[in-house]
Image (cartoon, rainbow, N blue to C red; front, side, top):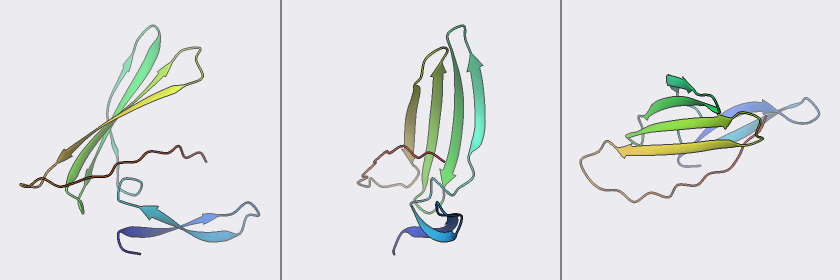
Length: 95
């Protein structure tokens, strides 16, 4: 498939299977940019450069103490000299 990368994982029985990643973000190296700890929450900042698409992406992950939720915010910067349409979609992945 165009625009995808292949990776290997395991299925529920422990057998190997091929999986497809859509886009670069799941497979590039993310760097930790900072941490802030307050009395009610902790926030982590991460960033990555998406070389194929020429985007810079930053993400914050905030966890509130004694709560069962996580807040994720993202910022994307287009590094090309021209405008481009984008379709951004999120879904949770556990495992």
